[in-house]
Image (cartoon, rainbow, N blue to C red):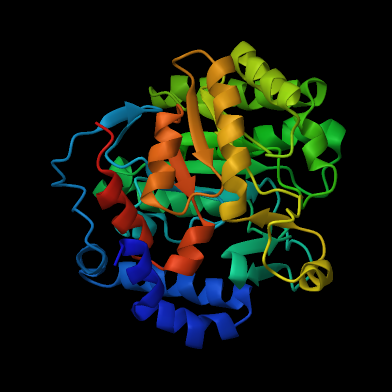
Amino acid sequence: MTSDDTARTGPYAALFRHVLSRLEPEQAHRLTMRALAGAHGLPGGPHLLRTLFGTPDPMRDARPSRRILGTEHRSPLGLAAGFDKDGEAPLALLDLGFGHVEVGTVTAKAQPGNPRPRSFRLVEDRALINRMGFNNHGAQALARRLAKARRTERGQRATIGVNIGKSKITALEDAAEDYRFSARLLAPYASYLAINVSSPNTPGLRDLQSVEMLRPVLEAVVEEAQDARVRLRREVPVLVKIAPDLHDEDVRAVAELAVEVGLAGVIAANTTIARPSSLRTRPETIARIGAGGLSGPMLAERSLQVLHLLRATLPADAVIISCGGVATAQDVRDRLAAGADLVQGYTAMIYEGPAWPGRLAREVGPLG
């Protein structure tokens, strides 16, 4: 029996089947976040989480590491943005076995997001559709939470990326200043900043992926990162997160612009607006769900294609974080072999449970 077989027949599989799957997805996620944050906050909670999920103590971890984006990484697998939008439990998530955690997407202004329901499971496909709409408490609230986490010894060592997006009420022509505001507030607490211009759930946002509209956004965030470097005496790398739905020539154009304006690299890719014919979920169910970004194993092929395009276009020292369709240790190995520096997952943990990141990290082995 493989580790994937065990995951699908073990205790979490039973919990998912009999409890979590009967809850509305957003409610189940909310309960999960509260449980993680609560467990981590208990005396001995971090040690308990690491013991339960077989994760090394970061203070005593002797595994070889590789320095990427200015911090040491012992595992290539990180958690993609969207799971911990408001930075409520990044250290707890790291204790599950992720090598890094990307919080957000957060916007300059707090916003409720789209009307519910806005998150849907495609269980037969082990996939999700969401149209959350950047629901979050705003950049100032996230800055306060991250400042608190960074005051601890564990928090100072943690690799926590911060994903920033455009506030819904901000006009596209004012997007650069909106991103600048968030970058200025959050750079002091971010291991790196990720510019999200690729969510399908904020009207007009993906228009910012055109080179003409993207340039001022990237330049604004890079300027804030450079100012932060002077104040903090450390680098704050900046990356841009793109959609899998871009045409190949647009992927290359964004990559070339990223190099021109001084970004550290690219995160590829976000959720897709496509609905592949390979989906097992009944077409009428998918039609009833409606609009939203699709994530899950069916993104793997396009994500790998985009990774190959980026690696062929970007200079060797540019960082690529590959995400989309990552579910197994072999998926992680494939991304690394194709030129990714780091790999991210999200949807698989919904179906595999909290033991998933630690299990994959052990199977893949260290980066060093």
